[in-house]
Image (cartoon, rainbow, N blue to C red; front, side, top):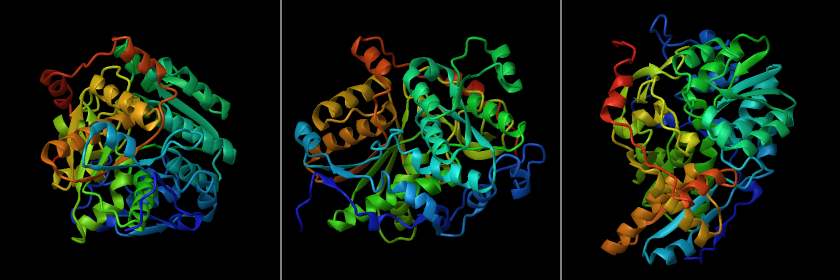
Length: 456
């Protein structure tokens, strides 16, 4: 076998020409979005006031396995893709493990994360439709930054509702968005009816992705020439992010490497779904077998403590209903530092796979995550984002398990982005001020008790 370099780079010619639609190979398809008024599957016509036309087609398509990437998007991808697949030799040595550890690094673009893969696609379709601009939400700020960058490149207006605690914790991320021309509003805010309603009921709330989604949807549907775009959860986003897994598989195949375990952090599901897509497709087609692990924060454990049911995608209950693992749309997690993972639900695609037993899930506490992040930074030389560090934590745990058993497993995880705008979080960790709040069963049950009554 050819010796494996520290970083595996693909050539420009090896950049995927089509996104892979995992749903095409799923036996049990994700349940359809429901109109909250009629409880019937949402039609393309009903979704048209909210989403771009071609994105709606991608959202509803669960039969086409490969969807060509427009040349304009491929040209943009070439600015930072293919991204490197890295062999974590230094981490392996530090852990003294027989395991082989690889990670796909998505932080090498100006926005600092994998979010740009879908941001440029969604902005492209909005521009193609002749729209003035788009609205969105952002948690930790990676998605908002990526969308601001994509909109600035294409000349679109961009309005970002940023989860309030992240807006306050990450002022520099906010300023990057503004540098690219975006308007950034802390959520919940007084600029929308739903924001005012949430503030009236919870005046001291630190916000949540569910709150910010409600405001962004309202802003899009009340302004002519605007549509709403989302950085995770939706099927279309997992489709765009499949480029992560496609590149990873091509790089591993190049050196004859087959992963045993594939790990990703899970908030709404975009990076995890993108990373595992082609590997999961093989598993669904009975061509290969892998172990997949979704890692979520213990403070917002939708997979591990949520319920598989139809629920609103947003706190303001203005969006369609999705069948997913959820903590209830009214669940507002503690103001921890994994801002991008603070969503009450999970992708319908990943939820169905988890429900059918193709995917495992685990939750980890915040201080344990930052211990892993610090070790990784010291030995691998890259400061990871708090979200990515959830995957690092479990990759380390699995590698140490290999040390105990003597098994030579091959581990692949997603390093979704860098943590250079997350220094407030690192500061609190180093100063011993970081907490490990975990919601009680009563906390979760209170929000689950408010799930909409859907009998299908």
